[in-house]
Amino acid sequence: MEEEIKKILFNPTVGRIATIIIGIAIIWIIIKAIQRNLFSKIKDNDHRYKAKKFSGFVGYLLTIVLLSVVFSDKLGGLTVAIGVAGAGIAFSLQEIIVSFAGWLAIVFGGFYKSGDRVQLGGIKGDVMDIGVLRTTIMETGQWVDGDLYNGRIVLIANSFVFKEAVFNYSGQFPFL
Image 1 (tube, helix red, strand yellow):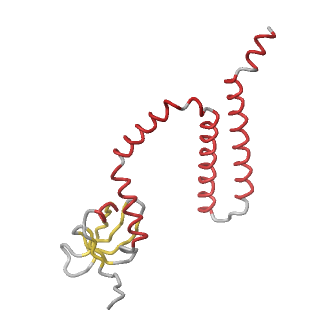
Image 2 (spheres, helix red, strand yellow):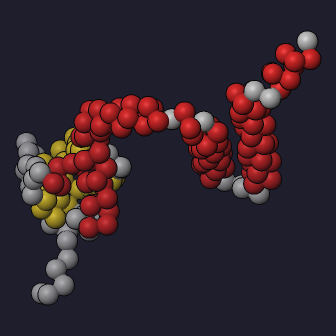
Image 3 (cartoon, helix red, strand yellow):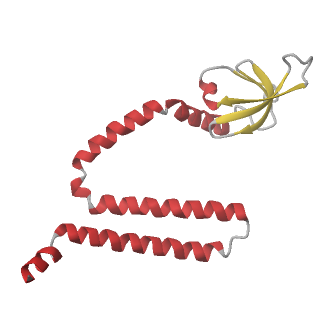
């Protein structure tokens, strides 16, 4: 009986499982303590919600890091599977990835900003919002004479900045 207990206690897998359980418990106790102390100081509901989501994300990320460190010697074959899965995911989400890159180009490249009158792929109007994946435009023209709003709100994927010309009628040219 004693040898069976020693065999169980000194088994490396049991030690790893104990490390994981204790590590996850410590991570989540720290996250909950931070949330309790931090949330009492945040008055705005929106900021409190974002802080809670972020702290939960950090907790999950630390848990994944802990698992990968504890089982690092067992991850040799998993690396290839993760690489193949990553390539498949990147291929299937290429439009979303290009739209995110387009958002970065719009925001940091100065293509246009909210409130500008633009023409994007044959659609002319005023930019209402620039989201991470889409730009929202209040369309002008078409069946309405002049530059009056026609009542349509158009959502355009941000990936268009790499595919079509962007006409910004509100843009400034510093050399004139």
